[in-house]
View 1 (cartoon, rainbow, N blue to C red):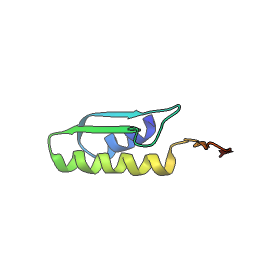
View 2 (view 1 turned 60 degrees about the vertical axis):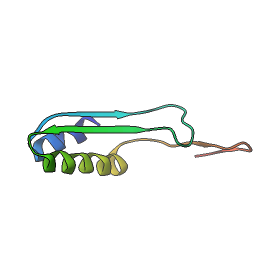
View 3 (view 1 turned 60 degrees about the horizontal axis):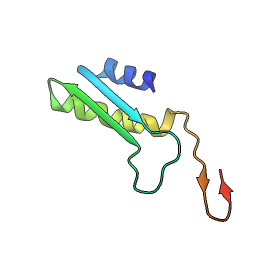
View 4 (view 1 turned 135 degrees about the horizontal axis):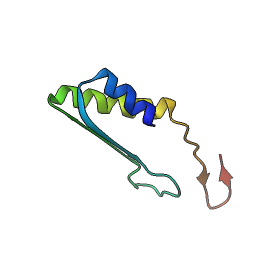
Length: 74
C-alpha cells in the first residue's frame, strides 16, 4: 500500500496523504477503507484519491474469505 501512495505522490502535487484499510473480520455495511489527500489544488487531491482507490482494487494483495452460515468460501 505504501508504494501505491508513493506513486500518487510522484504523479500529483500532494502535501500529504492518509490511507487506512481495515483487516480482519468485517460485516456488511462496515467501513473498510479511508483515503484522504491534501493538496493546494482540489483537482490533484481528487485525482490522487481516485488513483489510490483504483490501485487498491487492482494491486493490493488482499485475500477475501467469505464466511457463510453453512460453509466457508474462499
